[in-house]
Image (tube, rainbow, N blue to C red):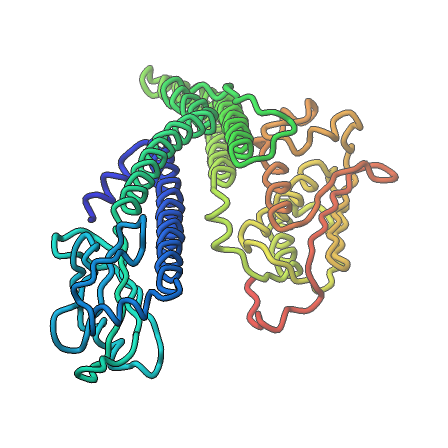
Length: 481
């Protein structure tokens, strides 16, 4: 059985559908055919039973047979003229009394004698039997009365041949078998045709998938009718959406690689130039003046720091959503901002950073959230004039960071969160152009919003809005910042 199931499952879908349709139709046709055959059989037997009862009710038949079997056994008068029927009388003991005109003798069974024993009930028995030659007959057995000679009960047995009835039933069975066979074959062919037509979009989808696997061409699309909403249409739309997403992801990946290569080229070129100068000085024996050597080493350190920062930013952007989701928890935004402020004050000791913070709790990845706040403060420190002021406010889930620098031109505001984008005026300053992109991604993943705008009176104001509450939820009493 298991082999048959495995063999069936290994067949193509259209073949399985055709076989299932044929099997379903075969079952339905077989059920209808068998039911029809038994109904016709019942009707034919009922008609034969009615004929036998009509013969038994014929006036004088019972008395004539009883008199013949008990008083005049030699009488040769036909009880049913024009009919070739079996007529006989039976007793509880002894051979049956057969009408001389009967074509044979019907075999008597114990159920026939039970009719005599149960004479008071007056019941009649219909059954199928055989004559002494083995021919099938339909038998009616009914009680007549008592024999005057030996006081035994006498029963009348009338029977007719079932040859015509069985011939009719056999012909009907053959016709039903032929019709059923034609129906099953037709259903199988129709099922195969329907399966082929229904699975044609699946074939196109398969060809498209194989084409993508073979050529890695993600531009292929499967045509779908706009008004179609069946399973195949939804599957095709899902495939088109998937390939479009993959194509977009590949384009972003290629753009990220290209941008990363471009950004890496500048610090690497500077590092190579500075290291070559130091190496040539050692090889030629011409020492570099101490001031110039110190400047070169400072430049090398700065470029290495920039490279490390760029690589860290790239690693942050390359992390998957699943990796972030495993670390999300309830964090205190106030604690994250305070930690970021300590780092910002170290990077801009000449600046005045004022802070007004209120408690706020949100769901985010602690390290990523603190890094996002640090990036915002780093931008404010970077663009603030020496001795300037940075105002930090956290009020009901809204964090604002305002500097008093030159501000961002209005035409550049739509691009500030793009990867590797840097303002032309900031190209000479350290940075990779990924800081604000990381901020936007972190805030969006936490369900918040971030924006940059020109501040009244000059400078830039960064606004971060995060969902949450001023108190930690009851199920998370321990807050990690």
